[in-house]
Image (cartoon, rainbow, N blue to C red; front, side, top):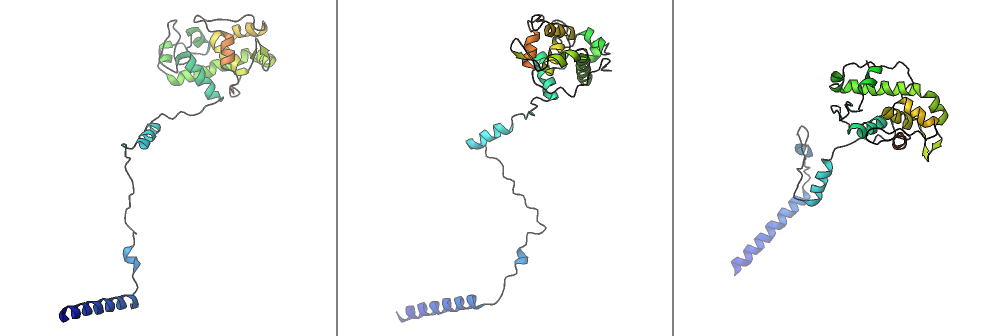
Length: 219
């Protein structure tokens, strides 16, 4: 019994001595020994696709990013191209109209393009052709643009972009007839699309970048 009491007393004294030494020590820890300098740290955490929220986020991240073109000139030509061909540079329709903007061979000749096969294979040339043709139409319709923009015909507000889109569809001459007849002579193409429809659908885009040019050429 006495041995047990002596043992407990010795253990207690030992613990007290150790505590006293640890608290009274003036030794400082050198933190520089634990510096991360020079180490390459990488905290990349892989995505856990088993978690529903992360799976939804993953789907959103994989969606294609489309720029917002709004009513800019690029928005105008891309909206028109989508209506014409769904933006396909290499398509030819049942009537032989070519490419992203569905040009006829006679219209192409007016802007200097005499090789339809080459034209169909060349997206850059198609973009130049669109600008050249639009510039030429703007020159032909310059007086009508001045006289009719801001007015309403058959309840449709006339805008420059609507006029130029309609000219792409039906030709500048047909647009002149429509405007100067105050909406009575409404041209309709082989698929039933009218000048009036294009006037409304492509209204209000910024086409100020297009300069009226009687001699505009794509080549």
